Length: 431
Image (cartoon, rainbow, N blue to C red):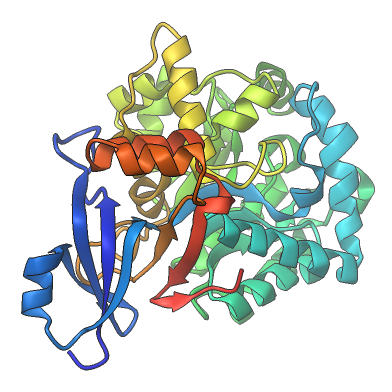
């Protein structure tokens, strides 16, 4: 094909689910990825792919590792500047750190500066797609969409709606929330690769009237996502139970308003009941595992084995700023470590971790046919990794016995210093 580019280097991806299939990691030590028109045309060993695409322009990235772009399924752009509020449980951390900073988003100039920092940080860490909690203010949420559109990163986000249990500055009436969300959907959903996500902060801060508005927005706007928090900490669950005394579970509150479904994504779910897991599987809802945040806040360890046994989909999120940064490799590594520490944990391979940071996120966000791996026809969303010369990571990569060991070394040591290029739809993103 005219205009095709062939990228040569070590290539790894997980086109299959390693929790369900053997040999899910596909790797090519001397590989080739052919792209054109923003799409993947071919992948395989360099010699064979080069022979079948002789006209493609070769970009020689030997010595580098090409991975699919990371997909962060839970993060908060207004919390970019408060990473590191350690030593507090969830509700105290919100009161002392997160909510005061989120109130500053009422200043549109301040919010836009934070949005620019946030998007740059995602890109510098190799994230090409993110599901993001916006701000409690329409102008600030709009700033995020605008900044994302100018860079080319793939973002889904929405106004954070709340009408109780938060400071007055962070509340809207249900009618105000409906109008602002409807306006943002009209202007940004399904435009420039962006999507809208209906976003109540959590049930504790949303009245029944507000949740009804959320259900209406989902029904009226096919293709929008739903995101919120659920079952993050024992203290939070007790507070929600007191606020909704007739509900038989946290999930049941959302489910009553039609908010549990295949486009619904629930962050954390550290303490689910068996009935909640069963209902999530039945409706097709997904959970987001945020290991760094859960550890930092002392919330608990994600019950991965129980989610798998129930058939509930899950992916990874950084949860900035309760988490400890933007790096999805770090999130994957902490997932591995926490699962090693609990009796019911799982031994996760590098293939599991890459899948959770890439393809699992695409599936959770209803983008499984668009991104997350290098299957021909997918969007050309990828990251070129090359450790700085003379570093222990560079030595580990050079001496690794096979691609899986290379991936393990990246998971253990790599950060944004090793990211050399990030592309979405084949186009390099500004860093």
